[in-house]
Length: 247
Image (cartoon, rainbow, N blue to C red; front, side, top):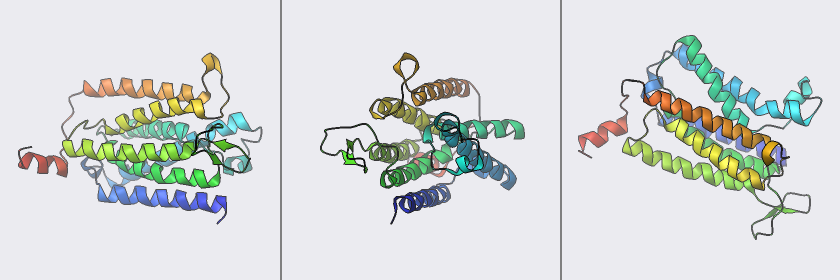
C-alpha cells in the first residue's frame, strides 16, 4: 500500500469511527434539534473545518494556493481545521437561532476519530517532528530520525477520549466537554510545536502556536460566558443511571 493510500484508508476509518461513535453515544441536546438543523450544523462543521484546515497552506506555503489544483493538494492542518469547524458551527447556530449546547456529543467521537486519523499522517510521512536521538525516532525517508509527533498526537487523543468517558460517567462539565477537549488539545499542540520543524515568527513562536493561543483564549472566554447563563440541564442516560443508584 502506498503512503497516500494508507493516508486515505486511515482518514476513511477515522470518519467511520466518528460516525459510529456519534450513533452509539447519542446526545440529548442534538436529538432535540430538527433533522434540518442537525444537517445544517454538520454541513457548517464540514465546510468550516475543510476551509480552516487548508487555509494556512493556501496562503503561506505556495503561490498556487488559490488555484483549484492547490486546493486539492495534500496540505492540511488539524489546528486551524478545528478552529474553522468550531467557529462555523457557532455562526450557523447564531443564524438559525439555535440556543441549545450541542458540543458535548461531539467530544468523544472527535477524540476517537483523530486518534485513528493521525496514523494516516504517520504512514504518509507528513506532520513529523524535528530530528531526535531518542530510540523511538523514525526515519520518514529523508535519512533523518525524527520525533513521531503523529503518534504522540494519536496517543494524546486516545487518552483524552478515556478522560472524557470518565467525565461523562461522573456527569461532570456538562455543556463544556467539547471546550475542555479542545482547550486540552490546543495546550498540547502549543507544547509540541517546539519539536516540529515549523518556522518561528513573532516572539519566537510559530503560526500554529499563535493560533492555539487564540483558540484557548476564545474558548476560555466562551466557557466563562456559558457558565453565567441559566440554561436548562440536559440529562443523559448516564446521569439517570447514576442518580437512580444514588451515586
